[in-house]
Length: 327
Image 1 (cartoon, helix red, strand yellow):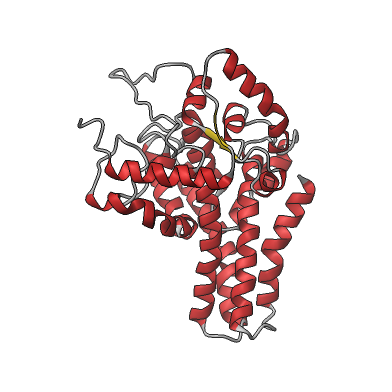
Image 2: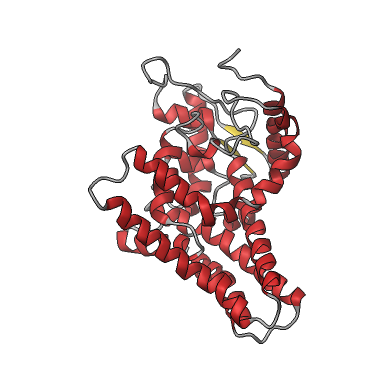
């Protein structure tokens, strides 16, 4: 984890430092450096901050806290993500409205329980483009939208809690955007719009990688989308719920697993989020055997390509499938 953390931070930071020196005059080299930085940003998101914010990076909570700030460094916010991911997604996985991961803009449909529009017939084609734009949206607007929503849900308690957190979010974003976008515009000897396009290219790489990896774990034909009953109760226990709503993929590729922070073992992560991802491969055999013993599903796509194909298939199905609540 230490080696990975240092490597991912260097891959993210060093290309931007080179750009900020102003010595790079080639437009194509600037784009290349930004894209390399995008790979580092994805590595931080999947392999560093994810474990840290789950408190699974280290037994020392200060280490987890400070490494969680690497998410702030790349433009998002650890406190907001902790609510959205740790609390909502991990508690209410694949439950419409409660799980923020399946509450996208209207032109994307990730659950059979939401309204279907005509445009959804084509979402298996155009979704990938919007996956690439997801982190741009995240760092510019989505954090603030989520903050407003979470305030209504009662997550910010105390008179000044919301305003204090808002100031922290803005401060971190000023720092991140200053280093990643504003300083390059000032220092690089190219037009400002070149830097903006390169910045978007960096985020497109990050967004496409991160969003695709997370989608393969939950938006596939084998996973379920349970709903609460009239009393607001979801049937079954929490652990079984995670098995019904989550899928693994590409379990035999150690290099791939290392690169994406063990997120191909999503079942193990959802059941045991307090365990560092470097242990998922070894415990996956125990989890699979236990699921089999109790007659519970253990969804798994054998490689990344087949998992992408299954997600593509599910997007197409959701684009044709009527709203189950209406039906």
